[in-house]
Image (cartoon, rainbow, N blue to C red; front, side):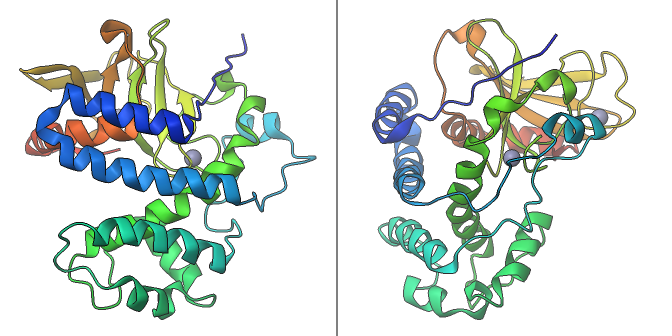
Length: 286
Ligand SMILES: [Zn+2]
Ligand SMILES: [Zn+2]
């Protein structure tokens, strides 16, 4: 049976409302929620202004999925540099409004060769690989990598939005995104029926995996997933597999009966220490 999954676009108003809701739910983390909300605001604005450069017409979507190939090569998607710089400026100005020791001024960042027409493909390739980042004079390399990653996101999300509806998820059910092949940011048990969905770190497409087996390893033994959670935050769990040592954080919306903006749940679950707890178990993010 075909499985269709809708990836919601919360829109600017939806993001603002969610930021308020999450701030009310987790007042201790208001700062971080507000910060990422402002980044999402920039991304939503960009989504209104950019076009997808990939052409999916005539593509054999079903054939690709059956072969196990994602529909898009993330290293090959055309990203117009001028437009990318526009988004980076926006994200940068959000960062600059906060204390960000070790971050370089936006102007300097935009002049860096690694973000010029010629150097960007290599920068992107390193980020996609998850390589340690050596950017222009920034000591906070993780923050710099995040700024560039979050600025690339709208270009992938825009393309994904044009093709998501055509996907029969029963043909996929793997541990990486059917559209761009990137790993998950986080997962949810869907509110209406508890179906397990993962959200892509890059294009933010939702896709379905089965609960019975580990989606990340080829061993994928039935029932091999276990989970850990923190006492005061039982709706967040990290599901992991002993065989491959990978984990993915998850929020149970079916039990909580609430909507979610998973990037905000990702931040809250990190701040409460769920990733730390998983890492102490020797696990790595999927
Ligand atoms: Zn993706
Ligand atoms: Zn596994």
